[in-house]
Amino acid sequence: MRRLVAHRGWSGRAPENTMAAFMMALGNDTVEAIELDVHLSKDGVPVVIHDFTLERTTDGSGLVGDYTVEELQQLDAGCWFNGRFAYERIPTLEDVLLLAKGRKRLLVELKQKAGYYNGLEEKVVELIRRHGMTEEVLIISFDHISLQQVKALDPSIAVGPIFLGWPTLIVEQIRQVGASYIGIHNEFLSKELVDAVQPLGIELGVWTVDTAEDLERLNRLSDSLVITTNFPERLVTQQEKVGV
Image (cartoon, rainbow, N blue to C red):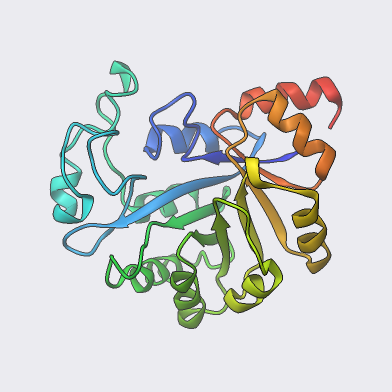
């Protein structure tokens, strides 16, 4: 059976990056890990939401970083998905760490860009260490300098760069960051990349895989990929059909 990561929680069945989506993923044995996204509130609290702005997934507007955590948690983060999730709020990272501790691994994406959130790395690392979860969390980001900062703060925390495009000098990038994982959009995974990464003992993650066609193509490239999906139930059904 493929190793499945629930993208922003079980986001095909509940509003992404909410406690409802995380609890759904935590309660299912087919999900090995949960991916989530972290920004920093105006008062310096790591909060879980994907976009830099509020409009798509809440009833608020403007930049996440312009609001305090108290203000952010007054917003509705579920009604856009379905009215029965109207009481969902933007979680803090600490909320999710406490929920998942001892249950499933977390892939925490830092939504950093060129130092936009001053102190994000320090605050995230401090929370992970405070709750004794350095072995249960993988930090990922498109901002590879951010990952280097995490490693400098605590070398025991696993990190992984993520890519949207054709990466070059991939072995050099892995070594520079100190990565134990890399993630790439499924459209850009190639046999050449698989052949370059897997001999290094690095986890190779692919996102976001939601269709049988995508899964079949990936199966032809490798049988050891870590698959991130919005719909774990779809991929489990497909794997059972083909006996993966």
